[in-house]
Image (tube, rainbow, N blue to C red):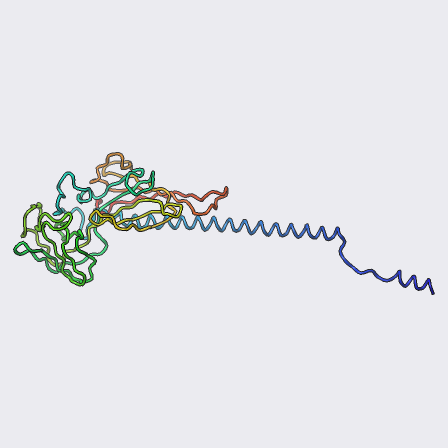
Length: 331
């Protein structure tokens, strides 16, 4: 009985389980799989960040070029035609000390390497004159009586003109530049007078040649003539207050700067060169250009991504180049 009891106890099956070696091997294999999964995740994350950063700077570049080129093509342009003679009746327009923007024929001027105020160091800027995007049609041109205001009656009361705005009016034969004295909201009539405002008008006679001091007569703009705002537009790069730089556009009206609009971020540098009619190479603004005969501009922008998504942990950088023709100076 004792021997049978011992055999019975000795033959009982032990409980199954992992040995220490097997457990350690399992842990090592699990760690290898986890490390591989983490490596793949981090690699995908880096790729996603790099792709997203590249897409953002490319989109910013496209927006910058599209909007800037659209503006620049209209430099020194008016709604009526090319190469029209201009009667500028603003006070001081013919003086040697007049600001450059009063000279419609000059049309455009550039600045190199941060020489224009409120631009980032080392970056270029450009300013140009053009007609605003909103255009109204003249119904009647009222001449002044007994020294009173002259006026234009427009085809709309929804115009965007205001008191003191500088405008241009044109037909198939010429363009006139003048300053409004009154442009009431909700009225289709806008008025201009001699001598009032800053700079004000030297005459209400819009004929060529300009005879300052005249008070009436001269050029009459008939029905169908067009009126638009006279704009001075500036494009430049400056610090955006978020640790980077952006491309900005400012419409300056009669030389008084209005709030600037941020067009595209991630723009670190703007370099501009210009082509003068008859020349074979593009040169910078510092080359002493004849701005009256600039016919094209080459734009080079440098962009930098906000995140350090490059292969070496640096910011992604790209450079883009685009050439714009001043449409109103080419046949």
